[in-house]
Length: 332
Image 1 (cartoon, rainbow, N blue to C red):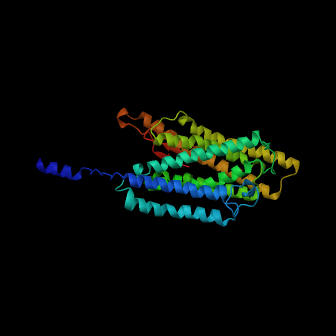
Image 2: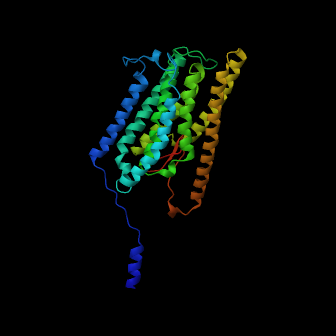
Image 3: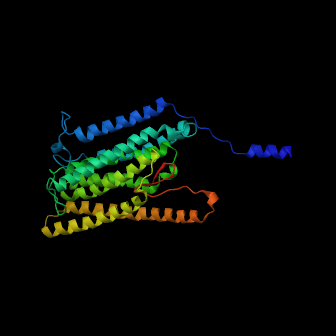
């Protein structure tokens, strides 16, 4: 009997006690995130002339061409290469010993809250351009001085800031969330917006950025509220909103192309932009629908289990599912 007890004790799982991070380390991480926002903001909003002044008329797409293909190539390549490095760092120095979720809590609140403010500003600028500054709703490829094109530039630059969505997953050891869909979305959308700004940044280019910015206001608000342990009333509608976004952009693109083609304003370069935007939206709709279907089936199976199994509560959003404890599980 004693031998059996000893054998059972030897096979019993060993609890891993994670070391709580110090307040200094937590707020140091938060300060680094705030500094990243500061550097990004300096480049995106003020980096258009030698004096470093805020001048929208000199911004890429408005007063000059966007940077060369070397910039998105360098940044997207660095993004991909950084993932295994961060994974190794997290595995060897963080996830096995430190409560990374607690370590990055304030950092992620700053990041998600900052994204809410930034995307809210973009929504305001697009609507202000439409309502107050005479920006055409559809059928235009020339207007750049209404403020909408500057909003498109900021939206494009935010695609690089959104790489932190993945960095947080990797640092927290949640490699199951770093899916093909997630990586594909972050890489392809950055290139798609660079092409749009390079080829045709004016007029109708604003529409996809407007819808995506509004979705991100809802999405990042959800993440922020979840981290702070508040319920989110629009939680259940985020996935549907994302799918509606993809569909709306495809329809808008088709109508815009048809109008401009009949007017004779379409040039060869515009076929690239219209084709790329349609492909991007259709591919994301398809991949996201597969993901949604997979999770929906999983939730149905979990409902059939006994109450004792206590399945994790989750819901899909435009880029995620999030557990009941507020842990982000972003899938796009």
